[in-house]
Length: 160
Ligand code: PNS
Image 1 (cartoon, rainbow, N blue to C red):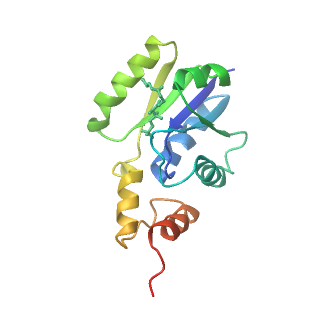
Image 2 (cartoon, rainbow, N blue to C red; image 1 turned 90 degrees about the vertical axis):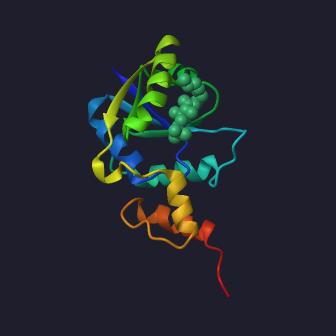
């Protein structure tokens, strides 16, 4: 039985994340989405809000689990009984950073498997989405509808 963890900040989850999660799901016996709680970086959404958005977007993936974690990812993997980390590579710019993390995590005992992000989501980042929404731009097709609504609620205060 091989359990995999898809880790991230997910502030908020977007279609690029979901692409990685959906592609990991059939490859492993169990997939757990690990939402990093970073006390030094509050983020826009609380961990519970992020988990709620991911759960709503992954209801079609039977048996998937979504949990928060803090501290080392490899410790979370051990506690969860996961032997593999799954990450997405959007572009070569991700490679150096992801390679160092994967090598460090391997040094600490957990291996990483990479998927290559589908081209239609290669440019999607949570930070860019927040920027675009706060400046009244459209992110149609890049996040689930429920996430788009939440982003608008938080980032576009009602105008008189
Ligand atoms: O969505 P992100 O912010 O790119 O996700 C980064 C994440 C959560 C995968 C990474 O920051 C992480 O693993 N943090 C946990 C702390 C840790 O294990 N650090 C050592 C990594 S080699």
